[in-house]
Length: 369
Image 1 (cartoon, helix red, strand yellow):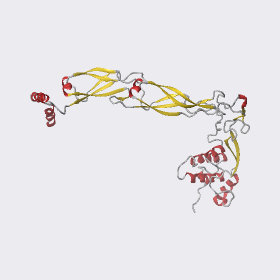
Image 2 (cartoon, helix red, strand yellow; image 1 turned 60 degrees about the horizontal axis):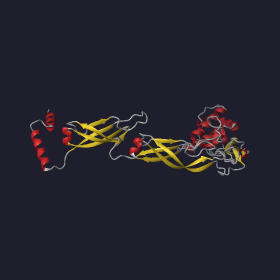
Image 3 (spheres, helix red, strand yellow; image 1 turned 120 degrees about the vertical axis):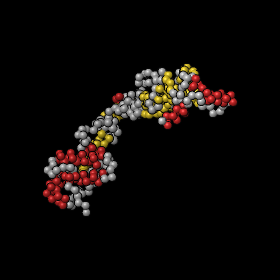
Image 4 (cartoon, rainbow, N blue to C red; image 1 turned 30 degrees about the horizontal axis):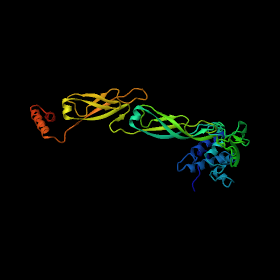
């Protein structure tokens, strides 16, 4: 048979602890190990042990017996040794029993409370994100009843303080346990936590306090918005409680990719293909940007992967309200098929190139040195 731990040790106390110290220690341990909040595999066993310890040390007579004779002096006492959850329901029962672990009172739920927020996703085109747009969406929204202003009553005189809970929205019940009589609070069964009763319901909303409407909402999508950013629409979330305001609607923006442009922050990146001849001799090209074509001079001897910057041809930065740049990367393309004339010209070029040190010759020279 497993030997029981000392009850003072279970509660983290030394012998001679006062009643207040025992109570505080129990509250702390009960909160720590209650299975409703502690999901450890041994939480239930530890809570039972804490519960059992407090059944003894929280009772002056049992405590005196335990202090004198230890565990043996308690064997056979009625109502003791079960180590279970008798007298409790969930974690809330312990909370109510002590008036809250923080020592304060529980907040009343009869006051107005804001409703839950709603979330939706909106897909937009790349150019719509660059320049912004206005979008109209249709929603079902619970709006406060225009006749009763959310009270649910036909007239203000039809609203009365609940007689069951006296307007608190909660009922106090008493329960006999091993600790004695314990008071706990539950939501009022008459007014369902509202603190008020209605004798005549509103003829428009039938006492609900709200009306479900299908409404059109204009959404302003700012220029420069990016995927993952959210737009907030005030008051278009779930309805409030006890005449509280509606929650808000949050729209998660997702921008579709573009077939040519790539965006990083407020900069736009584009890769343009040019021939070996253009890279060697230099050229001018009309480069597409989000605002139209821009002429770019590509100097002679441009290497593959060279990048050019077009100032202010990027996207608006929502924080600084300044535009980024467009970065143009050169992709030098080598011909994979040549006509007879093209081949003849390339061979002439190669013969000419033999008279000077080629890039490969320089590579081998550096490698051997």
